[in-house]
Picture 1: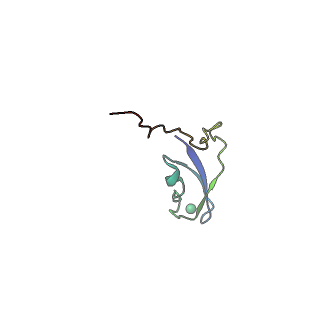
Picture 2 (picture 1 turned 135 degrees about the vertical axis):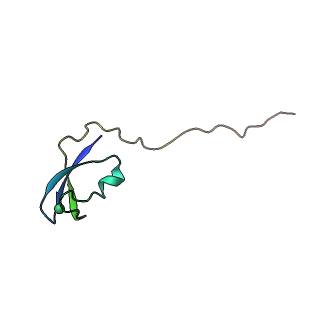
Picture 3 (picture 1 turned 180 degrees about the vertical axis):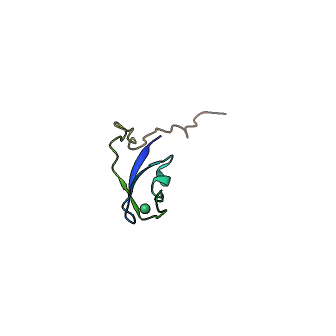
Length: 70
Ligand SMILES: [Zn+2]
């Protein structure tokens, strides 16, 4: 489970928050004052070698070939 570091602009408090989803990482209140005016810092424990999404999907779809049937 990734732990992100945050910095609160309201009370200038640095804290860490355990985040389960990426969407949650953008909505983390300050643990000190509860303010939402926080910014996520670049964590040094970022996972290296993340699986980047492959581009394109050239999946050949065969079909539509009826000949001499029936
Ligand atoms: Zn705060």
